[in-house]
Image (tube, rainbow, N blue to C red):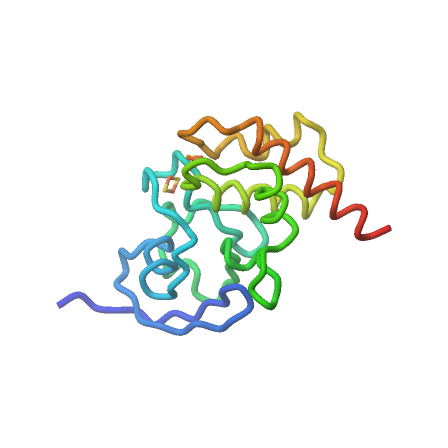
Length: 162
Ligand code: FES
Ligand code: FES
């Protein structure tokens, strides 16, 4: 029988404690142990970006980390972008309004990468946005609307601060 390891992770501000097998990825932990199914599994080898989450403040690919590496850390998933009452947050609303979703599979990763960008750069240029989502693949090739959505969210977030 495989030994399990006890881990304690802050997920979207909630403390989660569980036991995991050592080889469990952070992606599988988030989806199957913590119920954060908004984090999508795509390539599962670090290429597509569908599994992106914020890990101690930085965007990472959760399929490329082990759950045990998250022990004592804080993780923000796409669910953490919603408002406290569960309604879509500014970034999610901008994606809706800009029609930036086709099948939607890449969108959680796109939202997380966009959030990481806007957290450090409130007025990103087109090049900044392209670079920020450069590691996120959209098989539906909806990049134009996704970029427009991020520009819209940036504008709305800046206006909210005025
Ligand atoms: S599922 Fe993690 S990068 Fe593709
Ligand atoms: S909207 Fe389908 S993969 Fe991006």
